[in-house]
Image (cartoon, rainbow, N blue to C red):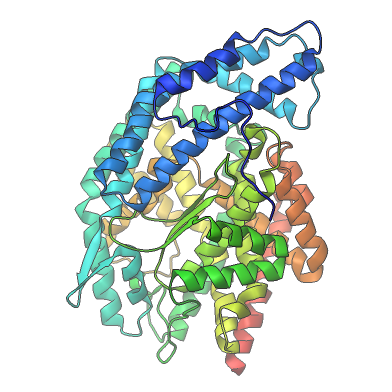
Length: 578
């Protein structure tokens, strides 16, 4: 793969934004620029490129601070470096960004300037200007600090079982045990650990809700939901499309999830399904082990991606050469997984908490899809074009989860394991949709009921769980734990309203996968072409290019659900013959 690191032409080669005093002169140069009489368009294009270069540099610096902290949440030096940037530098940059936005709009030839995606850039800039309030800077700074506290609280959680300490991701493997008593014991230990920080997370959410509501009021909105939709630049869909998604999931995906849960009870010989039974394997069936350690996972993933498309494999190989993976679970790491784009150097960083499970393979394929997307958009000229909307970004990752099943032989030698792996992957793809709808609906309630009490919050969550949660699962005696289940979803704390994107993208991904089943080469080419568009066209256009609708109608979803069910039955039949 060719050199991907962007060469600096505006910012000094040795520049590192470790203080505001080092950053400010570059902003001042951009602010002091005077639009010339001659060659205005060329000069303006260069001005945009220079601003983009500065933004890319700052974005990547903040990215590395975040990566360092999430890899080692207990390191005081790394926390101090991250907090310094967020609390001391970011608040001083925000007014300068606002001034640059105003400077951009002052360009005399703005309406005549032509560049793919420029109309979207202008809309984003105008939106930022409309939302900007100086009084929100300290509130947003405090929020960023609170958001990092969630990772610190949850990243330190461990349980002790059979005389050994396990992180919560490591403990998940016991929930697949054939021994129901062991599953229940570990499940209760996990929930007890979560219960131990539940009050702290409630207080954290209380503070966040108050601050976010004030941010919305300061910007002229009546609630944070409406403000956040604008901040997320959801120009092409809104609240009604989200509510429509909730309904479609209730109508088509909740019944399918209940069907899967009944099957789970049946194959394990259980009269009723408890929360610790959801991942249980039938007696005599060992857990799938797709890889042995981080190195093995990386090497197999490179081979699997390369089989789909040589470019995809080279993306991961480049990341390995550059040291852009931290994959194994350990104490002190933040929970979850992510792909963090590096806007200047190009090769992103993939973070996860792998323990050798099938779920870890899914995470790697997911984050690998994001990584490929990062490489595909990196050639786009401006930083803003490379910052793809979440709906597009998640289409990249969730489609890759399903497309990569074709390459599962790199992870599984036995045909039975191969069919089991594909079946589990499809089941997770459809099984997660009710939870996504539930979390999104909960956020709508949280932010349109400012000042609510914790009791009211609990009632709202209970009501939503009754709508979206599988009625097959028996929570008797565990109601208190069910009531704080939402606290395990980091998006509620760190990225409010960033979750519905997974739902839209999952349905889109099922469509991409279905297209690839009948016409593999054209479907993969369309997928790659769609991702390379970045943020230069609408979300709907990206999905159309990929060959799927963004906001499907009932008939489409009903047909897609039926087709997906036939794929599950295909793998089930092969398992029965094995």
